[in-house]
Length: 259
Image 1: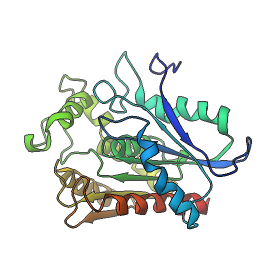
Image 2: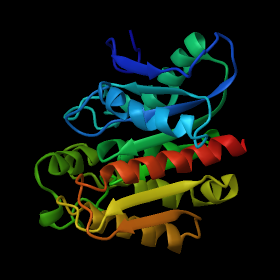
Image 3: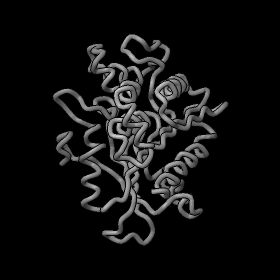
Image 4: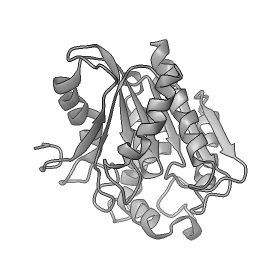
């Protein structure tokens, strides 16, 4: 039973070949996108295994918890489920009891998972070895009223409303915004030296490239070092998705190997 959300949470774990209990290894928190689940880690397994075999990813524990879309979104809901707390604290502690000790922790996420990974990393940057976000669910605006309607289709509109507690609360929105967290913690992020990757297709069907470019601008304004990749001709998924996933995992692998 996860205390943060008052229920059991399904999750999947990838263990390295010949893993032995008590072996000190890094942990990668793999955060899935909207309308998905921990089962997405099985789809990513070939990427991790291929990179490991090539020597481009270290021996590591990789874990993905199932996080709901509506009512989840990697948010801590006022008086309700605390999904970010689960991801940042309770889930890694649970994993450490079963698979630890961990030498470092990194975050990888795509789409909704990219949003969750960035906000979790920026909230406590010294705790993490790296964060990589592919097509993160971020918007070209920093207030409840500052995002164009064209950028709020379907589930993204639900996330946008949820960030403001469904009431348009600007303070809540800033607290749940990757930009708001980055502005609040800019000094800590800079001093941590956190490796940050933001990758997005330049023709994302959900216009997430506009939010990614906005994020790039904010991080640049704040003097926060990061790598920004706007991939020409690429959409939210499509033919380049596998290449971009491998590259993002390599980015995480390099950071973990340097630890």
